[in-house]
Figure 1 (tube, rainbow, N blue to C red):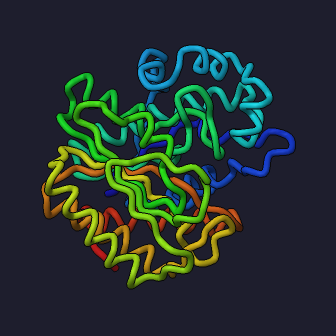
Figure 2 (cartoon, rainbow, N blue to C red):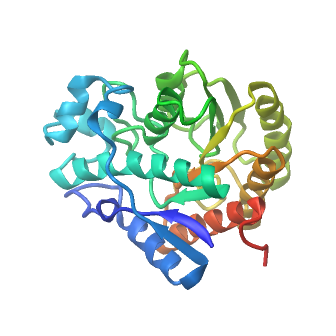
Length: 302
C-alpha cells in the first residue's frame, strides 16, 4: 500500500479570472481512490502559523491568512488569495510535513498537493503562496525530527523560492534540475543547480540526473529526501521546455525511489507542476506517485 496524505482544503474553487485550475488536486484524489486498497489514506492538520512564520515574513503570513494580499502580490502569484485559498495555503505545508513523518516510518509517502517552490519570504509567485517544501524541511530539522533534509526538485522550473528560503540554514540543502531558459527569469542559487538546454529528452536527462544527484547525496548525507516531483518536464507540457516522454518521467521517478532505497533514505513527495489538460496532468501525477513507490519497493513494478 502507498501512504498518501490528503486534506479537503486542497480542492478549492478557482478564483475568478485565474489561469491556474485547482481541479487537478481533486482529480488526483479521485484517480488514487480508484486504485482501491493500493492506497493507504492519511489526513493531516494545517501547518501552525509559527512554523510558517519561521520561513516567511510575519507581515506576508498575516496578509495570506487574513485574505488581504495586496494586488501587486496577487499578480505575482497569479490568482486572488480568497479565504478558501488562504485555508489551502495553510493546509498544503501540513500535508508535506505529514508525508515526511509518514515516510520516516514507511520509507515513502506522497502528498496529493504541494511543491510550491516559487514562494519567497515576503510574497508568493508562480502559482505558489506558501513554500511547503521550505516550511516542512525547516520544521523537521528545527524540531529535531531529522538531522539533515535534502530537497530534490525535478520540476521544469527552478526551485528559486526553496533555494532562497533555505540558503544558509543548518542541516538543509537544495537540488534543482530544470530548463535553464524557463521561469523564473532570475534564478536563485541552490546548493546544486543543474540547468538544462531546451529540448533535452529522456536519455540525456536521466544521465545528467544520476551524474549530479548521486554525488550531492553522498556528500551531504541527508537523513530524508523531500521530492518535488513536477511532471512538467513532459514533452507536451504547456509551460515546459524539455522533452521527456511518459516512460522517461516514470523512469526518473522510479530511479529516484531506487536511489533513496539503496541509501536507506526515507522519501516524501509533493506534486509540483504540470500544465495542460487536467485529466492528462492528473494521470501523470498519479503515475509519478506510483513510480516512486515502485522504486522504493513499496509496490511492485507492473
